Length: 472
Image (cartoon, rainbow, N blue to C red; front, side):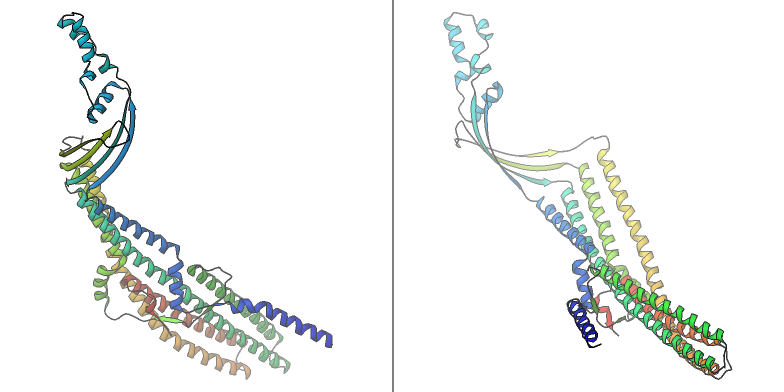
């Protein structure tokens, strides 16, 4: 016996040692820390931040289009093409009379040919030049002077897209806070259901013990004992279901936080959300201006307006200025210099209606976004009213459910006493216990619904953040 006891003790110590690292590494998180973790690890939020970076680059690109464009190029060429060879010699300031065929002219003159015959001679040096080498460099600046509003349209579009992306980031953050709140509160709701099941289990065990004692005293039948045992088995199943619900809720919280499912979590205090001050009418007016989703959609409409401006610019002339400095040298150098300055006006007078159709297409896209914005405004007002009604209903249900629990507990106590005195039936006792269990579960649901509906209201108002949920 002593050896067996030693072995059991050693086995218990070994199990504790193996379990200790996992327990010691359990992550402790309150609600604010959970929100911060989710905001840092959520891939959807990182995607929105990438869109913000993209929009900022678009703004910088639109600004850069207004500035002069400066380009530098260098090159080396070797050619015996007649036209290019002669042009390169001119660029190098190296063209001579012999390049025009003067040798052929003098030879023909000395040969006594007539002017008509001399004029018909093809100059060999001009038509069949030797290979020419050219080392060139160019510095060129271009500046748009008037673009018909294209650059302004692009700038408006880029700036609006940046504002839309930033508003989308705020909307995404608030949505993540809402997801974390639902998952965090879901764990405590599941634990409350588990506590309800635990109380039901204690009651079922107590009932079985009481019924068994009464049976032994000859007060009740064997069928009551069997019924009490069946009830205990059913309650034990509910206990297991409640444990599964808690495990599932914890898994959901792990997913929202971006943590491995097997990482232990130790949560802080449960939280609740308070009703905002004010009235639904005032909330709606403020939300129509501040809701980040509506702000994002509004900026998308503005961006579409910028696209209309950019498309309409193709109907107007485009004016630009240019300045260029070049060098050409038969060797690797910068011997011959030249410059060119000028301005150019381009106007697409007729293109078969392509530019006009592009304007109409962009305007139709803008109008479609505007209509979606109007619909979203109406839906937001409806969401605010609906969330407000549901939150108020949940608040009223909490008070009613608390009274229901008190009434059901008193009723269960009275029926239990009647059954113990041999006046009531087991069916009445189990019915009273079931009503108490249901009242307790309904109270848990009402409290959870109140929290989620208040959060839904704040989310619709665009005011949901980690500070909106306080420990209760």
